[in-house]
Length: 153
Image (cartoon, rainbow, N blue to C red; front, side, top):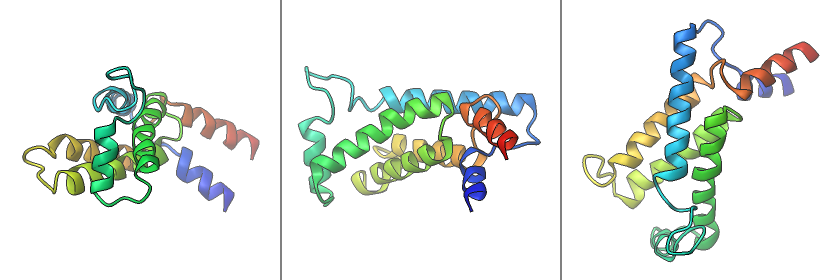
């Protein structure tokens, strides 16, 4: 069971070419960097770190319980998850969490308006889903962990 879990989290595509692994790296890095910076919810804005009052209010209006906690969970998932995606550590779990967060943005907050205001959230949801499906690639910390766990078994 533990071996299957390790394989699910740290496994990469073994038959991937070097070019495909470079593509995985670029996708992971750009999506991770954008998640850290594009939504501007953790980095200081108007002197405030973390979710802004408007975001907490929006989370409450969407009906989420504990809106302050839910807002912090969302912004930390984007920010920390973005850093993890850039490094390629816990790639699949972070991609799945961010796919859920961006799904919420696109389909709940923006009411499914993926041709308009929900487009950014929708695109990030698709990219995070692709990262979760393809995995981290060889140029990742997950790959190094996979190699280490293979040698220790």
